[in-house]
Length: 374
Length: 252
Image 1: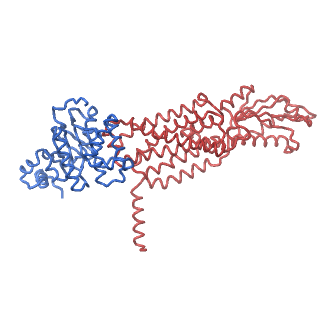
Image 2: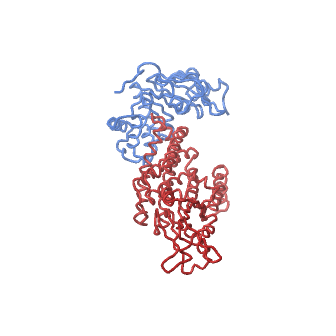
Image 3: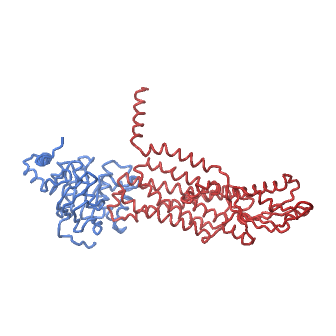
């Protein structure tokens, strides 16, 4: 082994690197982006969980003091985790949870404090909690916070537990596992990665082999080419979704209470948008190496900002706006709602609109950009 | 048979004052040229003379900066007559991961041919380029010359009236090169027009007409023998140099 020859190869590689500004930027910029996004999002505490409070409790005077446990507990609940919103009508509050606009309702019944103060063996103060259990991290954050607040209100001596929590799950159950809540998002993530990367690579390959020019020398139009590619990739996305969903259901017994057909349709719509995105991105890549560099650019925001692994409520407020710009946020939310909450087409309408807009914009953009690459 | 408008009359290609700029580079300068129907027409010149750019402009793949052109009687981009044009680019431009007949079927469908006609024409063109026995092989498994022939077969499949061939004989062995030229002669014999770019001046002697390009401008357009005679040159290489010298534009 000759050192001179080794160094010649090293110098050559560094020189190539120097000539490729984008790769240089990627090498420095990407780890920085990763550290920043991970640092700000990973394992963040859940906060601002919208929780409705229906408080029918009354204070109970006893000797020189007056007890009002509901008030005490609510005061102890103040903080960043829960955003408490007062409500008067229990049925209306429950409907808010059903519609996905709140995660929980705390209901203090009229004789709550009285039952706590005068507790007998049979009677306890009963606190009703109506929960959306489709996100175990959020459900456990609410319950954890509530237990701490109760304990504090009782002076730390919970003892024989004079307060009982009565849980009523609108969606999910005590048995809903973390894997149930993240499986829909992971399925969408798998579709995102494959469809986007495939379409980037397909177009870049055609571009670099002179194929695009050859295709456009026939009567083929840009729109026909884009939709032709998209359809082919949809078939792949369909097979892939089937495999991932089946594996999740069969191997991990992931809960599905909603329509699998709707889940599939949502995935395919999402896949169509990803193909458009991939084809648009391919305009910015001259070769396959540069195309590969785009992967983390899509992967990291999708992993961290979209509620797939951590609920959106765990993302710092400053970054939540960003998560609204990442399409996986809508796809994941729609799939979770269908699979865990059993929602139908109308109920996921907002997400559906976002996904239709995503597909329309990216496929339209790809049509405009693809011809310029020939 | 599809109805062919303008078939018997007018030149195959006419350009008038055609110019194309890429930033500071003038790829085509005030190019006025006529390619008659039924001719083998050679576009000659060194690399960078503007040959490929001219073909791309004629195909509508790139817009000219100024000037105009008619292809089979239609202004560029030649949408109305696109299915009557066959194009063989310099790159192979066939899918390596498809078989020979899969490639042909793709281009046939893109050209709007019926499946039945695709099958029939596939037989014909494969016989012509001598690839009948390899039709089911992946292109990636073929030799360089076979790939080139597959690419030519794809350009011929829809039986175009005008063939635009960009350096079709680069990297092709002498035997196959001779076969290509013999084949071009049979095409023109059937009334087709073959517009071919090359920087092999000797090959160009086989053309009916040649146009010599230099830095995007037309030096001369005539029969190859007439070009040699006018410049008193032994071959087209010398004729080219003589014409460039006369313009006072010799590099080196």
